[in-house]
Image (cartoon, rainbow, N blue to C red):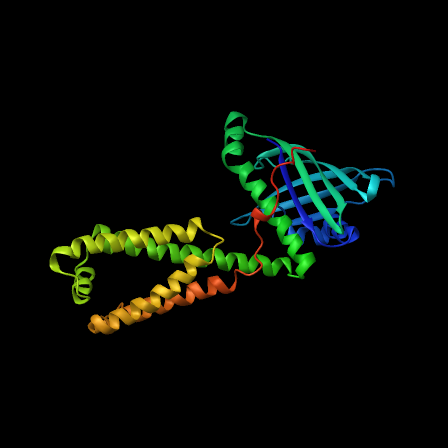
Length: 301
């Protein structure tokens, strides 16, 4: 059940080391932490202790602490940094844990690896919550953050910019999916609204086939709305939405022009829908993705 994440970054070892060991730089790319602060060392040979905090929303943050328990350099320039961490905050699901960061030079690149595990609070309820929700989310956040670090180093994309564009992308996807699902379910499959039937009749669908046509249209919109979410990192659902909005607007203008003057008309809805799809497409380039990271330790190691 331990969390393992690995990525490869095209850079020098010292650059990865600096952006992961310097707390001011570390907190910029790691979505698991809002702030990281080193405490003064009690001695040169003693562990480096630190405090961390994570905001979880609504002005609430979870605090914790940790210490680096050893750094070592191995053969071929490989480096390993080990640490322990704990939280005395009663709201924290994590009680204590331990992990490591490993830096392995490979063909001019750096394999950046982490592995860690922890104990939970709240008894069996805490273990179930961790297994079903918290641990998968934490593993995803670690992998997503590793890819955000890679983009920062390789393509000089500021982590804050990566976060902003990721939020915009998520909002666009959710909005587009909601509209497709709502338009497919409510006016077509559930209510069978008179305007939906009238527009199909204006388009030349015979009276006997209108009910079947509205069901097919509704199911198609539900399928596309679902695809927008399921194929989250694919461009084609947004591209298809743009194309369909253009065809739908022209089609209504030709067959049912009276609806262009309605209070909630196809021009305003379709234009807004198309613009949101276009924004979603524009921000997709070089977005961080947890899928680019290896989430299981290779079997030959």
